[in-house]
Figure: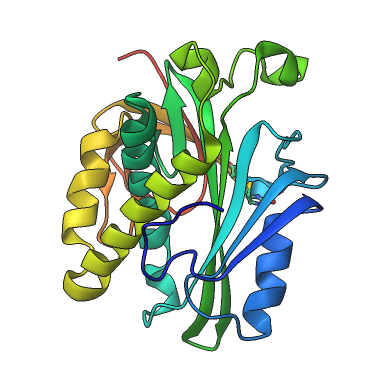
Length: 255
Ligand code: BTN
């Protein structure tokens, strides 16, 4: 139905009308042994999950709510690299399908005009020091109009259609994104994270900027220096200390 041009990603695809969360289904399929490249796509999620235990608003027929199962042979600490890889693939796929040029805000928010249009959630199934599978969840606000967003999201979220001024073909968008992610993933498995990191940095808006990072344990203010080879954010706080931030929300401050 999607007219896929990929060789492995999406060969095994599960379409659902309504699910609680495509992540939940993908976890289950991965646990049952689904092959690498298996994808779950739904028209609606009743309990879409965001990062940091948030809810991801996933109304019917307007978005792309999808989860991808990968089985890379890498140690668990390198898994954040795949989140960044997915973000690069989504930015490139959006560019190809719509011409819109989106920015990435570390770690994986994708923004248009400073409003969030895509969120990515990476989850692992690992045993001891071995990854069994990585589940990459991608949520894209595609054909939402302003009225699809609840009030608390109106100032911070947008959709591709709002930005483009016309409706977007979701099947083609998925196709374009999967082609890009498959290509990047092949590059990653063969040559490692180097090229992906450079690409990610070329789309990132937060690096070199003054930011506040809000983690679960508190806020740190300073300058975002870059990302490490593992995809972790390096932040130099006002007192000169270098912090490694694994998980946070960041906000750009006045520079
Ligand atoms: C974020 O908080 O920015 C990440 C949001 C990730 C949402 C996607 S939608 C498809 C997949 N299924 C979920 O329940 N969450 C992810």
